[in-house]
Image (cartoon, rainbow, N blue to C red; front, side, top):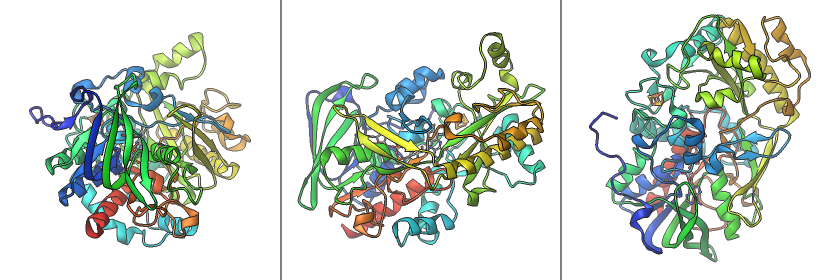
Length: 514
Ligand SMILES: Cc1cc2nc3c(=O)[nH]c(=O)nc-3n(C[C@H](O)[C@H](O)[C@H](O)COP(=O)(O)OP(=O)(O)OC[C@H]3O[C@@H](n4cnc5c(N)ncnc54)[C@H](O)[C@@H]3O)c2cc1C
Ligand code: SF4
């Protein structure tokens, strides 16, 4: 954003403006302002619909972002960033609670899935009519609005450049990530929010456009239930919640002719389960899918000032068909520090070499692994489960071997693999072969997963999923879902852009038909 640009959140209703209870009626109520919900709100408002957009989190302006990881996570992430799925590895998974949802704190990578991903979707749930030919016009529209472009060389920095060098030395293809940013300064702070105003998150793009088109946007509203009668949803009920303490205040009721849930792949099934609707198939909250991710820390002989350069500026999709994607990574020092091995002086040694390190990561499609989202008894929070299938884990272990090769080819003098049963520091490429040869299990890893989907999956047959290819619930005629929960299987690549293209298609479909 340019220095004197107007406040992008003008018109957003904050909790301080609402005394007592909130009662509204409208044509369309959209729940959630992340990549899915924001697109729907804008497109339907521009199509002349009277739209109300409800978001549980508060808005964050440039001045609200703090770089300290703990404080930032406490303010912008659900459960302060400590949310995790139970299973064979305990898998941390982050979801935002903010105007803009995940787009506020993510790395802004925008990737179109290859065509064959949708063949997999078709094989899993029989879904028809969702493919690249159908989605490409929607990808075009979203990319144009967000100004999606390749990360320029000028803001790559040495950390990203090393990853590129490593891939090229191995003969692997590697490309600059395409991102929804403008005037990026390469400050590597995407995770704690872009203080430069460069990231085109949905709060400053789609939500702002929705307001210009007449939508009413209310933050600090937690939707708890969808009200329904027979095959029709009639509105929502919820509470106002104080930002950061999340204490409930006044009641909220919104009556609407059409409803779109986009509370994220954890939030939407929670609302549906609590409401006891849209689940004749039993698939609500079932089939939670992740892209599990693992990182290896490459240590370089010379300082590379890794805090300079786009957060994730290069990636390689060379092994995507095998279920693997390789990336450069960066996160705040306090987060990286938790990942370093040893204690006492040995730990301090690692910390002191902070300017020599670069984390590279691999994410896995994990097509055989799944889990669930359930309601935690007596709470509005989820009970998440996820099991890493051994078949997928073997693919992941192969990925770790390749990731280690990238580190050496990039000029690393040692690597920190972060795997139980393997030396904390590996000093030669031969030594690092143990990453391939040692039998490992999921619980030997520090797996994390921030790409989540499939909890209200799309299916052809109503008994196999929750929504149809239009995003409409099989069980209700006017209840739609437009977040990553509707994916029928993994997106292979980072999911945000696909979520937005699907949301664009869903919104235009509603505008046409209803
Ligand atoms: C650290 C991190 C980095 C990532 N990097 C990338 C990346 O570079 N590229 C990429 O493609 N993907 C990335 N992702 C994933 C991506 O951000 C998500 O897939 C995407 O945000 C999902 O969009 P969504 O609309 O489905 O849900 P969300 O973004 O989760 O939005 C849901 C919204 O609904 C709100 N909500 C939830 N429940 C309620 C309720 N009951 N009432 C009212 N509002 C509610 C939430 O507060 C939230 O704002 C990253 C994720 C994380 C956590
Ligand atoms: S790298 Fe820095 S300037 Fe660029 S989008 Fe991320 S936070 Fe903003």
